[in-house]
Image (tube, each protein chain N blue to C red):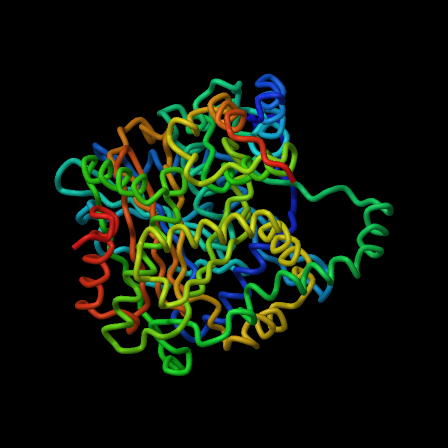
Length: 454
Length: 89
């Protein structure tokens, strides 16, 4: 049991964060377009066979895991903050075992894992035993419950360095609700006009009202009515030498300290190449990029999404030159941080928690018909840097498989683990074909490894 | 004339204070010589730091100065800022 868990009792309920509620509203937009739209996965590849009993024991002895298995999003009346509330004891987090290839684990559970925030566990474990004395632990979770960093912290607490939840600086895994206070309530009421202004300011980014023109996308929402999508993912792996070359190319494009922008610029150019081939490459790229709101070096909280967003807009004519595109994205990043856009957007998401989901979804979908992004993008940086062993076995590799929500139906996620860069492309059925996926990979490799040179 | 009149101690001290209060978790120990990548700073955190220098001291650090050497630590960034020519607003 961790120090934090031992000293801080976990609360009976907590409010959803603004980002949790936002993701549920976005998820609602995706309804009818596949059941697994907001399921994320983290895969740990282990050197050795982990027994299912050892995993179950780690889950059963973790108060945090037990707590997470029991919480449900409770239905509340409009204008009351939504909450995760602890239900009666149940069987804990589902964990199952099967055999198969472990690198990567093929045949991951079917799309519908039954991760339902309002009626079932939001996370589950699958243990895949390979024939080569290796195993993979797959953590799947509904994105509304936690973000990728939260999942990483959960794994560290469950099995980090062989001794379980023992890290002294973990912090509280759950942020408790602030105590009720008349003063705070009055402040909320009095500052309502100010908050309204904040909402109006920040909503322009998501509605893209100022961008003008169509949003570049791989599939129109109207073409997807009535379809039920399968999700797919493909991992583009770089060895340590290639990773060093990527760093060198980032430095050459003046992105040494902002590699995320180098990755984003490369991804925009790769997606643009597909649209050009389809002869539909005239729309602007709008890409919201999550920004972890935790302080740097923090090891918690685990539960709830702690993210805000930066919004990048790229016109098709800007995609020609990689270095110029990185510079343009750098200016957008600086301007938005100067204007405190992530803070304003967080505030907006926090305010909108009082809206019922159907209304919130409708509000989000109104101006853009639900198409809020050309694709989703994230760069989680170095993942699980301290997790070199899990429940006693050496960790050989980690992969983050992000959710691929439709719309837009394409997510590209960059992570680095043990000195190896990885880009995972996740897409919804119909958004990319095999030839286009190959084109995307070829362009990404060319930009990342050669700085855009042929 | 450069910004050196501000003094290294002042600038580095203010930068460390800013990082401690606004950017870096209290569990992370560091001083002006700790490598920034060891503190876990990402690109947004570095931009936040640059904007703090701009806001607090009126020094705008151009992109061309954002090299590995200058972004090694708070101390190297402070030295870079102090060596820049003073701008008259």
